[in-house]
Image (cartoon, rainbow, N blue to C red; front, side, top):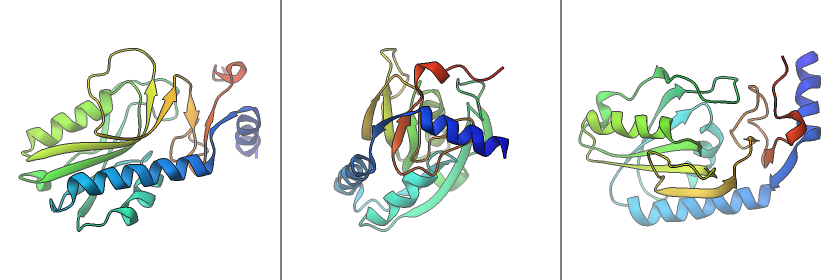
Length: 188
């Protein structure tokens, strides 16, 4: 019950950044761009769990070419609001060898997770590795990698919804919200 109250408090105090219609327009834009580049390549799509589950689930039916699908599970955040050490729960498999791979992730923040994934996929022998992110956070600092396909460009705010969570909550929202400054600091 306390977690439910905390979740509702977070949402009530949040600012709506991107309504559902804008989220869906970004999804369709990314799908069109991927279709234009990867049709005819029979790519292996690797969804980065758990954040990319919503984006992947809605993106795949919009891709108009045959593909293989698998997932990886790597995290630097857990339920925290800042990135930590890379934790591989499910690493890419040998099945990437000789393949065109499309990594699908929820957000490109600092870029360390996506960079590590690309490096690992290429080290396992992929022919090429593309990346699609639902959101690219603009914080003004250099990133070790850029995504090939980007749905939305977001400001440097803590965001949640559409697969992105806050304290493990609200991945299921169809829109994107930002935490207001007064609740930026997690409870002690």
